[in-house]
Length: 450
Image 1 (cartoon, rainbow, N blue to C red):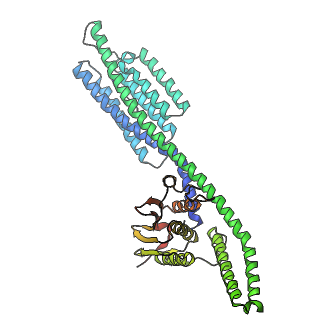
Image 2: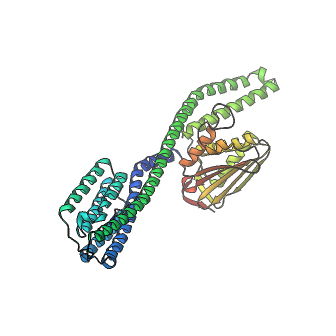
C-alpha cells in the first residue's frame, strides 16, 4: 500500500501610484499562484509523512513485505521536489500555470511509482488519482486539467497490466477482502480530509483575490472620477482667469474716479471688491499650479512645522473660526517643498470640521516615527453611520446638498496617493479625523532640521 498526494508630493506621485496599482493588478495572478504552490508544498509534506507511516504500518503491522529501498527513493524524491519548490517560491520569477502543472505531474508520477511497487491497480489507494485531478481542476487552466485527466487515465491503465505483486501472508478470500476494504476506508478518509483542507484554503485564496480585484476596480473608478473633476477644475480656472483680470482692471479704473474717491463708503466697498477679486485670482492660480500648468513662480522650500503653521494661519484668517485650538508638536522638523494640492486637502478637512462645529475646532500635529499625523476634531453631531461605512466614496454626505461628499472623497484619494492613511470616528462629543502621511512622500531629500 502507499499514500501519495500533490501538494502626492506632486503630480508625479499620482502617476507613480497609478502605475503601482496597475502593476499590482498584473502581479495578482502571480501572488495567487504563489499561495497555491505553497499549499501544494504543504500537502506534499503531508504526503511524505503519510507514505512513511503507511509503508511502515504495512511492513511491520500487516506484515506485508514491500520493496522498502525503492519506495524510500520515491519519498526522498518528493522531499527533494519540495526543497526545489521552496527555492522557486523564494525567487523573484513569477509562478506560472505551467509550473503548477509540472508539480502535479511529478506528484502523479510519484503516486504511480509507489502503486507500481505495491500491487498496481489492485492497491486500494489507486483512487488517489481522483484527488490529484480535483486539485488540478481547482488550480490549473482547463486545458491543463484535461491533460492531467488523460495522464491519470494512462497511468491507471498502465498499472492494470504492469506492477510488482505483493505477497499477502493471509489466506482465504475473506481476509484479503477485509484487508482491501480497510485500505479503501483509510484512502477515503485521507482523500476526504485533504480535499476539505485544500479546497477551504483555495476558496480563501480566491476570495482574497476577488476582494483585491474589486478594490482595484473601485480605485480605478475613483481615479477616473478625480481625473474628470481635475480636468473640469483646470478648464474652469483657465476660463475664469480672463474675466477676473478684466473685472480687476475695471475696478482699478473706477477706484481712480473722483466720484468714488470722494465717497468713502463707496471707496471702501471698491477696495473690498478688489480684495475679493485678488483672492479669486489666487485660488485660480492655485488650481493651475496644482494641475502642473502654472509653475512660473517656482517651488517654495519650507519645513513641515512652518508649512503647517502658515497653513493654519491662512485658514484662520480666511475662515475666522470662533475658537481654534491648534497645537504643532511635530519634532524634529523636516524640510519639504510646499504642495498646493496637499494644502487644499487639509483645508477641506478643516472646513468640514468648522461646518459641523462653528464654535470650536481642534487641530494637532505630531510626528510618529516616519509619519506626519494630523488630527482634526470638532464638537458637532458626528458622522452618520452610513457615511463612516462608505468613507471616501463620492457624494456620500449627510449635508443633503448636491455635490456633498466630494471634499472627503478628494481627501481620501490624495492621502492614499501619498501612501498615507485616512481615518474618521465619532467621539463622545463630535468627531475626529486623522491624516497619517509618510514623510518620504513629503520631504525633499534627506535634510533634517533640528
